[in-house]
Length: 457
Image 1 (cartoon, rainbow, N blue to C red):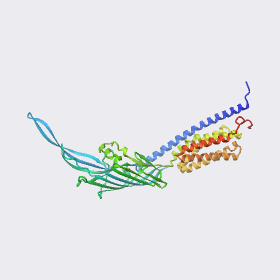
Image 2 (cartoon, helix red, strand yellow):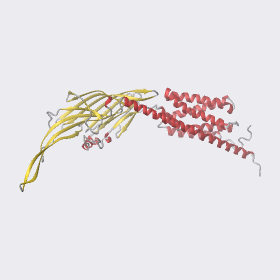
Image 3 (tube, rainbow, N blue to C red):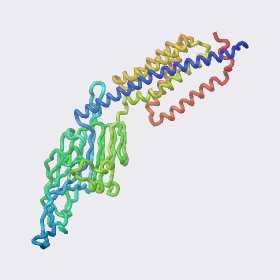
């Protein structure tokens, strides 16, 4: 058998080293995946606490209406033929159908909301709670009684009420209603089957005339959690909201016309026309006593108050770059080892990788107490210092160790930039990888890889 040349031994040694580094790299993915499970567990616990806070105070508010619910009595006359004493005779009967209920949407509706927010905590977890100063103005066209025709010989009003549905009635801290300029008593309950919670205002039908109108003014203070939604069933509607929270997420079937978001808060406005709202068509399919109103969800929209510094979401996003971070650091060690003729044991690769993995555990635990930004800074600083001091002897001196620690700190800084720039994360990551590859290629373009390692040690 021919003797193995020096070049072949160097190549075999480098190949074996790369296999061992790859095995270490794959092994380090196991604790990282376990850490991801821990992040999900803590995130789920945070959701549970937020739901507990909402159950103990008030849930998200979903405003439906206002709507005019009217009932009337119809007297029907029906004739039928009966046989008596061998003869057919026509018998006239009067039957009364006691109650007919119908829903009517306002012709015009204006809803103004002013939100002030605060955070409520339970231990390490919390939820965002808001107080809504709600103002509402609506104008209803008075409906006409069914005409006397056919079997219908008479009809009369029974009752009428204005109804406003809410997501959680416990959040109603104050409410006042004026109808045609007069203060009215507000009763609990929506009286509608498809609206679980709400309030109603009985309205007198005395003096109702054909072509008349009903003016509603409502002033209320509501408390809710996380989100606010509207289902403004009306011919013409305008909904506006102002809040001191600078991170809204608009949801539903409609987006606001021209939202403005600043560091101090946001404002938004929705405008619905008679042609676009489809409110009257939706109400025509809704039975006041039914448990479901088809099409009601299609007219809803709202805003969710997002937490931009959700420590669990950002930690999870950071861990998606864990493999890239390991590859870059291990690659830097390997090229330093090859080009500077130093020897780094696979166990040392493993310990450096363990320090990189511990970074994410430190980030998760510290962020629950310090906030994500400070937790990231502290965890990155201690891990960079540890890795730099540990690798100094292996790399041939304190200066190289300090430079290597600075390189790791730079990678942490770049990773933080990717986390902060969510919209440009893919672009920044692509540019970073291209720059790193270009740097390695340019730095090693004059290296004779066939002679690397022959004169080492």
